[in-house]
Image 1: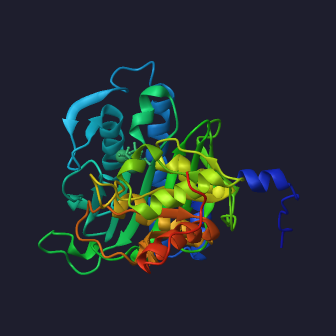
Image 2: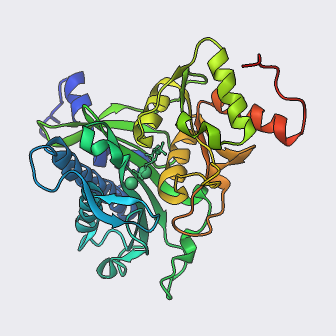
Length: 354
Ligand code: AHG
Ligand code: MN
Ligand code: MN
């Protein structure tokens, strides 16, 4: 018998070779068909991210990368050229892949069926192709958000009714942050893990495993331009932040970037309902619920209001919106304490008068 070849202990080589698809297999502790499918799906999402990242890095140089299309999406929001490009990227990378049967996107009114894959796959990918697209034209961070769900039942009438279940049913969720480096963060229900795109390899390489949101952080992230439109508890909370030492306002206009800061450093992100949009702005199935899944996996919290976890919300449609309060457990609880004070109709918190 020949001697078994032994790899010499090289920590750097071990670290550099943990790719995303390999990590998924390790997480599932299996090489079975389902584990192979999930690993391949994650790899295809990563490929979509590389295509989007490549275009973003050259946005000022190539035609039709910046600016608006002149159209509005189903949400009534102006669609940017990069929104369309990234949406098409996700469709293209999953066409003929046999991996995903249905796609749900912020940029498509209805569910998109990849019929050729439905005989082999019963997964649905829900995604926000470009999150924070107002940042594209000024070269600031944007992201992509995704969730993966397993199809329940046959969906013969193709209504996608099985998708309208709480976020606990997500099989996996994650986001890609296109910043100075491109970072892929995901969870399959076994912790939250981050990968950095190494452009020299064209691979996402493991950067941080089992990320935990700090119990408390100094960042609060909210569009204070909406102050005049908020309910009193949110105004009271922001007044409290203004009057106490130790807090920093941080808001980039792109949820993925703002959430990533909070995931790594702690704090809270809020998008409450407003007078014009009482249900808030963020979409449950492909923005709030995937990030809530990550927040809870990382030891944080995500609620829509007093004591109601985002992951418990029953969707009433694929583009449903909800308010969002997400981040460190202590900081979410502080916001919640203001909501509870009001709901119990107690005296307002004793913050100094303005
Ligand atoms: P999208 O670009 O996918 O429509 O998402 C934009 C979202 C989110 O990224 C961000 O937190 C929020 O909208 C910003 O909204 P305001 O400009 O109202 O603050
Ligand atoms: Mn978005
Ligand atoms: Mn978007």
